[in-house]
Length: 128
Image (cartoon, rainbow, N blue to C red):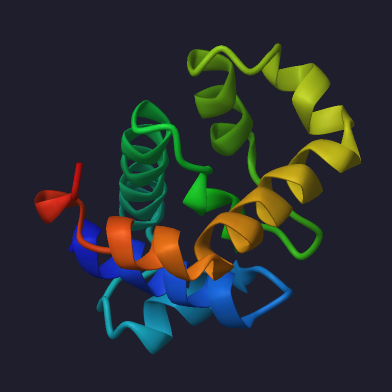
């Protein structure tokens, strides 16, 4: 499931200027998750964090920045993940509206680059 979601987020980075909501992601990908259930909503958040942490470890932008949990933006878990990655104090990052926009713009720029897209779309066969 992580790979499918990752590829969807890459597609969003390439073609859409606005982030996707949790419900839209679940619906468009037919994930079958009930977002009314805290457990299933948290499970999706964990998957998104895993994807971003793996991308960050490879020097690529945080794809989960493209998924908004609230009408205006990210939930606390995104910023807490960023703190774990060494990007700053999560509360400070959350208060800085330019941080999330910067993360989204980095995703768009990176994945709109055809060379990056061809090279990193399938991480299991990354070319050196």
